Image (cartoon, rainbow over all chains, first blue to last red):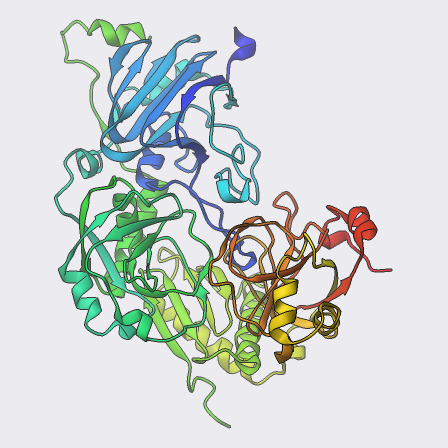
Amino acid sequence: MSLRHGEVLVEEAFLATIQDMGRFGHRAKGIPVSGALDRVSAAYANVLVGNPSTAPVIEAVGGRIKLRFLGGAVVSVTGGVSEVSVNGVKVPMWEPLLVEGGSTLEVRGVEKGLTVYVGVSGGFTVEPVLGSASTYVRGGFGGLGRYLRRGDALQFLRVNHVKIFRNVEGLTAPKEVVNRIAFPSSPQTIRVTKGIHSSLFCNDFDIFLNSRYVVTTRSDRMGFRLEGPRLGSASSAGKIPSIATDRGYVQVPPDGEPIVLMSDAQTTGGYAVIAHVIPPDADLLAQCPPGTEVRFTEVQHEEAEEIVKKYLESLMNPPVDFEFPFSWGEVPPEEILRFR
Amino acid sequence: MSNPMQGVKIKLTGGYVIHMEMCGEISRECNDAVLKAYHTILKMMREGEVKGIEEVVPTYTALTVFYDPRKTTWRAVSNTLKEVISESSRRSFGDVFTPKQYEIPVAYGGVWGPDLVSVASEAGLTEDEVIRVHTSRSYRCYMLGFTPGFLYLGEVDERIAVPRLKNPRVKVPAGSVGIAGLQTGVYGIESPGGWRIIGRTPLKMFDPRRVPPTPIRPGDLVRFFEVGEEEFRELKEVFIGEFKTR
């Protein structure tokens, strides 16, 4: 068994890829950043299993994945609210779970939110491409170069998982992190700064801020298309030169319906950019399934700079809460014992 | 001497992006200014003279700087950019950056260039004339982007400057060479695209497993030459960084 330690088989997967915090430094060559859609959840999937927050994790958009661990491991499931089980027994999200060799972890699809992350002690070991494990499916590189599918064998670093579990047992994410997704506000409020072409939009920028938009099914890792009041003034602005783009840029194509660029955003684009969703709120949007209402609220760049600073600090070193797995004196529930 | 910041617009977005628009319209002079600033700032970054700038992306008319608010502020980065502009505006393009010339073999027309026929008829030229015009000059790489390794090159002879397709193709093969107005370009990977495809290079233009994945930098020069079917097969998948013309 020890030979298979550090290996996990994919039994089912849907829109699942290996992701980390992104591939930086190559945008001038046209290479997108990629990386987890909801970076906060990905960071917690890691710290809850004793990894640095930037280690590779599995992202499953829609939260449907089934994995069989050939050896023991500490695992965690974070992100969109889903029913998660180990060997058929329901287990909590946002907590370290000790699984034995031969165990099956199943995530049955999101009930709230959209994207789910699975972290494993040691982190998935895929060959980094240009410094990152993130999968860019359109380019066929990073991770496995494609979506995960049944029969894939993934390796993770061989670590002393029992010892790691002793260190992380009882850790959980702070309530405000979990509640972002468990109790989303409706409509979800997304903070933006002005975009590079805001001034070209005249009144449309106010319309954009004062309206509700709905996330459509025409959304993917590259961008979320929204439906709502059309922002027509951009097309009258004439042809604008292509500019560098990034996750969070809100583009308005000639049809007037905004697209929020997400992790696999193209590096440059010729559509007018009305606004820029700030990074922690791009994470929030990544948890808005089609049909979710969103409204945008403006923050100034200076304020956004302070928010991004704190966001990056907490991504690198996510604050955790500690909860005793069971109350003192109480006999631990059978479910918890089963995974020891 | 005129103020080098004249006409330069600095825009801040998202809390971590500074977009420096050098001028409003695409021109060789404007791209000169962008690329002089780009290569100047890269040099400063290599020499450790700037703090907190993570990544810089040049486009036709602008330079976009992604910075880390944990390490710096927009004010500090803006000041650096002003220094960069005043420094680079004093110097000539060749003084800041020495372009390399890349020769790229292309099989024109047929299955490789399905739009050569329509480009020729719109231009009122024969297919051979279009090929001759397209291969008759070297082009500057203005920028790379939207997809990995896509080269934006210019400017083509006005006689063959035909507009994009009305309905973009869902799939354009890697290596395809296209025309869109005064621009010509090469697709680094297979992707959707609306450029008029006149040919294809057998070379591997982009390889994520190499560092760098393409040797061509903004400011470099590219010249195309025609090859036949046999040479196309011989050169198939040769990495652009390892291709030497005879």
